[in-house]
Image (tube, rainbow, N blue to C red; front, side):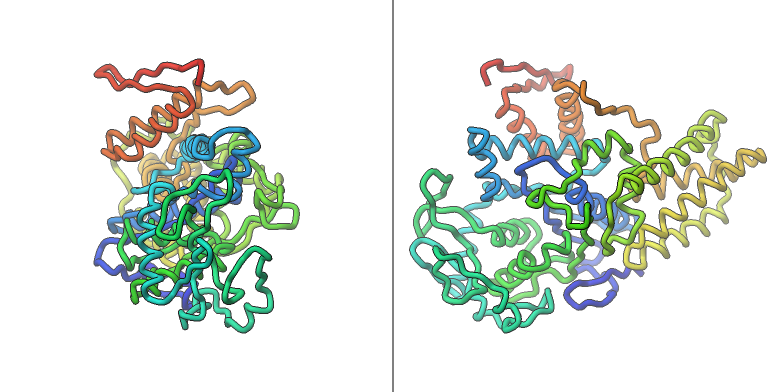
Length: 469
């Protein structure tokens, strides 16, 4: 049985979905004010693989990953570039999809954006006010932390201990230092929406509550993200959601450890970031993923060029063995060593059922690669075909590694706009075939915003460039 460490209890617990056979999960996505870095990539890779494993185990999975497309950092960056904030956000959402494609990440079932859920956010805040959990001050709305007795339950903190480190900015009118903004009154020149409290925009924490509950229901199975989000973001999400519904919000909370670079947590705000696309260019998709998955997801990871290069070399060794097997025609054989298959599958599941231990699962793939090499040497085609199939068609598919043997996409300084555009069109075509028209339309809108007009024809999608955009 699959067991995961639940941040809420601090214990390893058996995963038992609310709806038998169906897991609903929400993963906090990026705030789109810049290119994705390796720190952003870790939760994306970890929870993409976790979702794949749930499906491998036979679960139906509904996964939501949001985009925060209105935020102080987005506004500042857009103002610096002299373009509207929404166009700026769309640009980096499109860039995210390029990176996701290069890294072999699957689209979630839903990718909501904050700006498209403002009415749901306002409705949620109205309920909190009506229930006595929020209050209005000069157009701002704050959550009343003391009205929710279980505040601090997720992060295992006591309110009295938190007060000492709390700060109240001079322009804030909170009743209590830990109260947090649900709605921010409009400032001159900032984008805003009409609300019962005047023009303004959503606070950060309320957006995820509104989007997750709109798409997954008032209670769902798993809420996931980096452990830097436990407090205050996830603590605040949990408090406001449960205050408005009176029901448990997420049953399980999963958090990955941080990537540290140059001795500190990797973050755009600190400036110690390693751009993901540059990492893929230097070390390859599988090298980057091996690096991110070779340690347990809850453990911190120290990023060094030496460690990434070791992952690149390890990935290359496996791919060279797979290529050799293909050249010998092993990949087309259909007669397998079934008793050995069952043994390997049992070991694979044992590793991942134990709090999603990808490190052990990857060690098993390396073992299979060595066995494949040995079987090729001794001419044991049945054993070789079994190892090849387990790596490329089963275990690799679950972890998102070695699932595409030949990495055709190259990134270098000469990569053109048209190469990027063709990737986006390819992603959009896949989404349309899967009938995910909402996501396909979002790509169309993002491209239109930067002057690319699409026309879907029986012969395929055509595009024209607006030189004046």
